[in-house]
Image (cartoon, rainbow, N blue to C red):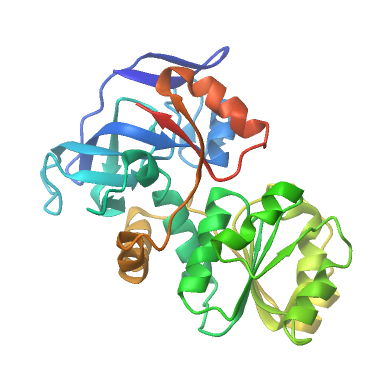
Length: 323
């Protein structure tokens, strides 16, 4: 099969062995796959949890048809249209734990649209509901809101009853579009006064829940913007792995600072997260109420170009490979 593989000179599309499903896995005939930030690290030769290194097939999510099922799989059959988080998704075939997979809604959702959803759905539902303990009528701030995951996070927060949803972007054009995806207040973190705008929008209280995809230099401002007993869920580190941390402000506000990643979760934990997300969000996804914009599509043969487009950070929404 054709696959986008990490080679000595970067990512190259070449022949690779077709995978076979283990007892709890499904084999997917991939029709589309979407890019995530972690793919850039893997493409550069770094590890992302258990995957990475020379010879690795890039990709974390895809959509297509079930080609075959493992002996223990009962929820899917060959021919089912599915989307799933799946290591090695940038290929003609990929395997996925059956507990991670979803059937594609029968509402004319394309494979390209479906490929954008699995990682964003499980990441943001877990950040908001699982780790973040979001309650109806609370306020939410998404740091790095113009990413695909961020755009879906704002929609999920609004769908689950958040009273006010805020999002950040340092790009003027992307920030202007956040309102299309559930954002009530768009913020530019280059403005040192942005925490004051959060407090003003929340009647002086501060924001109840921050989902932070940026980290780095925004940590202390996050705590300034947070309410007493607020929660900050660390999902990503687009702004850097390290930054200043005001321990006294953290204590003063009695903030819960929670780190999350799928890299150290067991298959059972991931299945539970996917199941919870499906229970809360699938009716809205089937009804077309939760969706993601596609910035640009590339054929599989241009996987390196697609990764370069993501690295340039000029996109809004998701980048998709068509297989």
